[in-house]
Image (tube, rainbow, N blue to C red; front, side, top):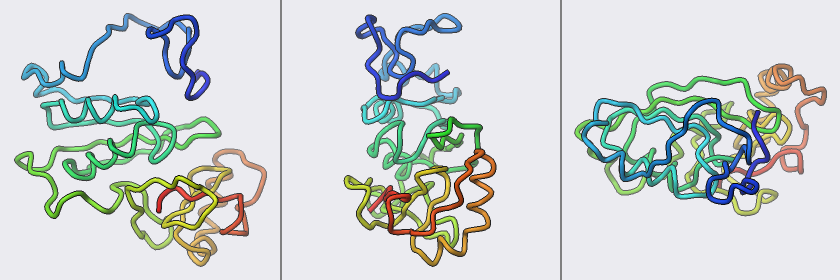
Length: 209
């Protein structure tokens, strides 16, 4: 199972696992570096980033070095995995081709996404992408931004339900329109509480501004 989120590992120091502490791995694990991903022998491989460490440069560095054309990511968005820099790099140079839901821990909202490098390796024009490549209002489809919220209790572009961490809306009106689907999210996660009624209250938090 997933260990303490954001932990530093135990006595293992640098060898400790950010999420699992001193839990032993299921199989052999070799230490590597992002620089290895630039080798042409990986050009026809896919890069799998599964729960990259939160607020750390690892995911962004691996993506920048990788010479192949397919990336598979398992984790949250503007949440407990990766970094804002990594998500901005995905938005700029990669196209989302598939997104699949995953069974999650009750306090997380991971999914699996598959990305293809933009044709010819040319990034999206017009400088850095402003829209988040994944996060959208569940009702109207309005895109979130790549700017994570630093204060989650203040208004922003998108607010996420603190209970299910799945439902995401841009306004109280959209939250009300999405109530039926939001209830399904709570049912799937076996959450007894109904969807929050106060969109501006503490039961929602701002994920991007």
